[in-house]
Length: 90
Image 1 (tube, rainbow, N blue to C red):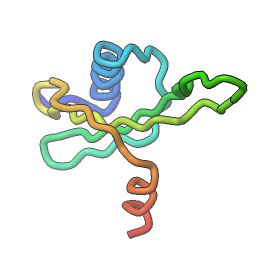
Image 2: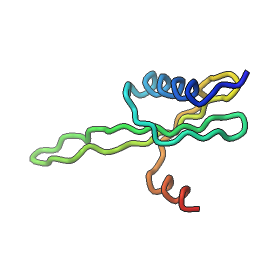
Image 3: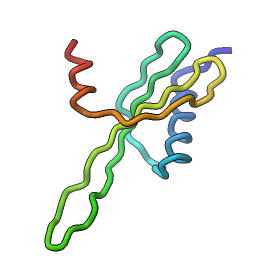
Image 4: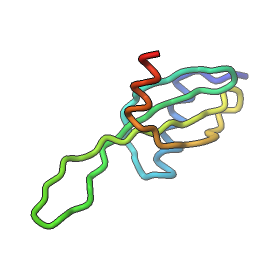
């Protein structure tokens, strides 16, 4: 039985937390393509500390692929924001 977007999102959030330790990501995108849910989540990452330098947090984007039939999280990859923006311009 196929899973819905809400279930796929919960699986993706749990997978991100297990691998990266992020418990409250922001949802950027959920798309079903064939037998997979492509879910983009983001979170803010604090930059390394440098002496006398204050840098703002960096927003990080991760794409998680969830199997639409089993609900299994299949992969996680870093998404470059420029690539993501170009994809939506097409």
